[in-house]
Image (tube, rainbow, N blue to C red; front, side, top):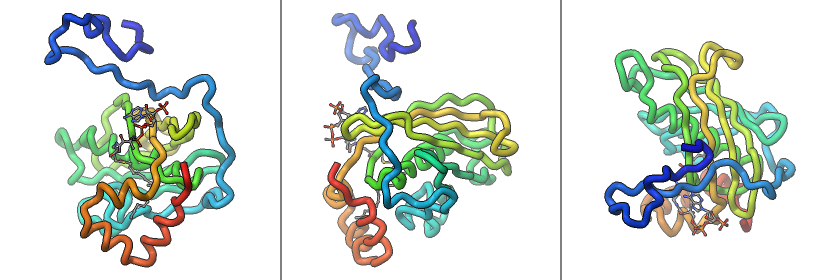
Length: 214
Ligand SMILES: CCCCC/C=C\C/C=C\C/C=C\C/C=C\CCCC(=O)SCCNC(=O)CCNC(=O)[C@H](O)C(C)(C)COP(=O)(O)OP(=O)(O)OC[C@H]1O[C@@H](n2cnc3c(N)ncnc32)[C@H](O)[C@@H]1OP(=O)(O)O
């Protein structure tokens, strides 16, 4: 199968029963006419700690009791770096990080690129290659960058290394995020959580910081 074609040939036959038909997925590589916009004027300065977009976020929230507590720093361009310390509570196999949590760390870091464009976006598609196992107690050093913007779609890529920011690659990811308005959250979120978030002046300020018209 050609790796750039997400649909295996057998799945393309119209007679294939629905239960075994593969789904056609959108690519996470930007189209040729995607653009690389400048950093937003409101983007945090290079080197600034981004902080959490929501205190109860599993990825970055300081108030989440079991969360990953990811810390993310703005890069010089359309990029960010993040660190995720793998704790015993993050195990999948004995002494090794659970792959799903590594994906969460990649998702969170890619999502943080929103700060640089000053817009809210949610994950539409996320692809991951697991390249080497990640032991408990290691720090995953993640670098993520925007690869293109096409309409409301933001394409991005990331690498996670262990043993230091220049250590061997343990995980690679590509994502496609879709810009949304704040109504995305207020329409779909559980009302009591939305109310709590909007009643919190700091959270309200952070939410407004993402308010643009995609
Ligand atoms: C009030 C308190 C607020 C608190 C929040 C404060 C701030 C938050 C803001 C930002 C967060 C900042 C940092 C976040 C960091 C990390 C967070 C982790 C991120 C996540 O973990 S987030 C959760 C998982 N995520 C979802 O829960 C999404 C569920 N989903 C939907 O909500 C819809 O599905 C949506 C919105 C995606 C699209 O819906 P829609 O109706 O708006 O747009 P539409 O369908 O027209 O698509 C427009 C164009 O995107 C293409 N497109 C759409 N979907 C695609 C897909 N899946 N794959 C490939 N392409 C796709 C179309 O093909 C079209 O492309 P084209 O323009 O070329 O035709």
